[in-house]
Structures are given as structure tokens and as C-alpha cells.
Image (cartoon, rainbow, N blue to C red; front, side, top):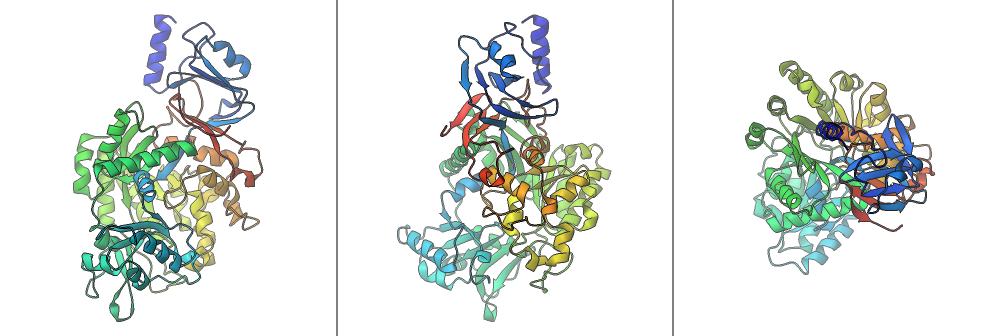
Length: 563
């Protein structure tokens, strides 16, 4: 390679552009070639290919077998994929990385079918718990129980009278505490509902044990913080799960500087392989030091970026905390909760935009979504260039019709989670009624038709992290049992091409990483996934049993499963 060509390669990579395609004998041979594959590149110039060559952490060629195999050298590892399917590294555009690790250390209540089953799991844990040790769990959902009313603490308190218990609802926006935990937190009938929160009350105004949104902190603030060792274990547990699932990058939707420091340590040690795009979360005084320092764009060779903040505007629909314009159909006394005061939502968005940080705001109800879009529009008027920061609406679940065209008009990315729709569909009609549901509930097609970009994720551990579940939900609008047969609001489905783009190219764009990731083309980082089935062509039901054969991050095989 001549000095001129080498200079061009270095310049192209530094700008995130594709490097010049290598000719046989024109430079060092690739380290790895995968061939005889069905490759979905997501590159508009070449949508499918048979082979891919990787040198170091970069792709050097994608094309036909006859174009790529001649590049091999004596030390090149060449793998015949025998017709296997390769896609770009999958991204989860909204997950909670340490939250997933923490959930793997606590009681997993997902799928419990009765409150008594939950109590039994706590009783079993309490039998071996140290005196005074907190018993934690996550994943219960009263909508899955025969009695769909809120639980009360009495059975839980009897099962664990001496150990405080706190069990987070599946959506993370409600929790259930036993009497011991309530006593430690000083929660009594005299405790007032905090701003943006609510205590569910039993007769006589006694706390039932269920705390909604900001009220959770009354109890959760009393739980001892995890040690540094435990935090790092949570991160590594999540990282291992990401590799197994083919998720090469995660947009970490709300964390703190302590966790960022832990990410850096593990990246430096070569132990954390998942790429992380971090959204910082906290009150403005807590965020300000990071805003003053400016974004972290490329730590550890694109393994960590910290260039966004996360704000939570309202609660969740399942716990009736999502802020609605009109009362809930199944609880007319409430319209939900604004969990962050509107002035604070604006102040954080303004400060972040001035500092060059993207703002990502959780908004589920139509009232919260209107507030968020109004804030984005205001800040874009006040901060020149802030439109280019690609503001994000996280969830965008229930929209008033008037908000739909504003996404494209304001260059706001709709960061949505396909499995939320298929998990929520059994009870959404009861919550908001058919009219509001038809107008703006999980409206992927309406948003895309209006010109919006959708970046898909799972919101794990709220939902399972497996991206195959999200891909399946996006194209079918069905649950894993294939129900409803015609799909729920089937007109809102994505095509397979759209769904795959939402988990790759679009997610990379949402993280300002589209020049490095999201497609398979020469010059980009070599992140890719080998799947057991061709998800673009098999029957939709077979997507659910598709597994990952190999996960490659930056040219390194970080997971190898069953062939």
C-alpha cells in the first residue's frame, strides 16, 4: 500500500467513512473471512452479499465469494458459513444495562400467575436470608393474575416478618413493600403522596404497600447501595447476556457517573465487550458537572459514548401512571402522573442542548408526549443547532393525532419497543378505550408514514432482552403464541426490512454512530451476528426459535454458540 493510499485509509477511518476497497495483494491480508453466507448488509448500495472480510476491528470487503476469498493470506482464518445468515450487529436502542444485571441477582418474578406464587418465592428466599438483609425482586404484573387489583402487603409481611422486602413491578414504575420495609422508611397513613407519585391506600388510609412512580423512593432510598464489586458483577452479567443474544451495542437508558466509571474500568481491562451509548440521569445539579465537561464521544475505541441525558416525563400505562389528556377509562378519577415537573424537563433539555448533549425523554401517555414535543420545539428555537442533536422520544406509546407529524418536523427520533405493544395489548383497551387506542397506541406505521425514524429496543429488564422477540413483534403485532391471529392493529406492522433497520441502522443513527455501525460495508467497525435461521425469509413463528451462532464485536468473536 502506498503512502498516499495509506493516508487516504487513515483519513477515511478518522472521519468514519468507508476505506478504499482492497485488491488482492494490495495490503495486509484479512484476519477473518466468513463466506458462503446470506449476508443482509443494510447498505443501500449492496443489500445482500455472500462473504465478508475483516482485518483488525474493521470490515475490509463485503461481496461475492469470488470477490472476497482472493484476499485471504496464509494466516487468514476462513470460515465456511454453509449458507448461514449474517446481519449487522444488533442494537437495543433502549435498555437498562445494570438493571438487567441486578435483575439476574434478585428474585425473578416475571411470569408469576398469582400473588400467592410471588409470596411463596419470597418466603423461600427469606428462609436463607441474613437477619435484616433486604430481599429484592422484580417482574410482577397484577394484570397476569386472576385478581387484577393491586396487591396488599399483608401476605408478604407474614412471609418475611423480619427482613425488609421490596419487589419492583415489571415496568419499573411501581413497587410493593412489606411492613418491615414500610416501617424502615417511616411510611404511615400520615405520609403524603409526593409530587409525581402515589401511595395506593387500603381502608383507613393505611398504605397498602404499593408505591407508584416517585413514591417508590420513599422505600427504595433505604436500600443500601451495591458495592463496587457487585456493580461490576451486574455489568458483566449483562454483558455476557448481550453477547449470547447478538446485541453488540446497547443504549443505556439512564445511569450515573459511578456506573460510567465502572464501565471505563471494565473496558480498560478488556472485560466489557458490549458497546454502550449512555444517557445520564439525575437532577440538573447532578448532571451539570458532566455537561460542563462535554460529551464523551469515543472511549475505548468506540466502546463507550456518553453524549445524552435521560429525563422521565411520566409513569407507565400498566400502573396508570402514564400522563393522559383525558381520564383513564378504567379509573376515571386519575389522568396519570407527570413524574418530572415540566419546568425541570425544559431546564434539563435546555442545559443539555447548550452543552451538546442529546436529550432522550421517557413519554408514554398522550399528555406527556405533547409536553415533550413542546419542550423539544421550544429548545430548538432557543438553541441554534440543537435540531442536529437528534432529540429522542423514548417510548412514544400513546399519541394524540396532532403529535404524529411533529416527530419528522422536529427531527425527533421515536425510540420504541415492539414487545411493549404485544405485552400490553390485552389490557390497553380497558385502560384508554378503543378510540384513543386506534388513534395513537403504538403507531409504528403512522409514524413512519409521517416521516419519522423508529429506533427499536426492548426496555430490558422490563421486557426480555432477546431482539428476536422484538423483531417478531414488529412484523406480526402478535404475542409468541401467535395471537391475535391477524395481529393487533395489524396496519401498524413493520416490514422485515424496516424491523431489521430499526434494530441496526436506525439505532446507530439514534446514537450518532451511523458512520461506524449499523450496516456491513468496508471501513466500518466489524460488528456482526451469525443467526441460526434466515429471519428475513422463514415463517414468522420460526423467528422465535432463532438463536445466535456467533457474535463478533470489532472483529473479535465474543460469543460462539451451537452451530
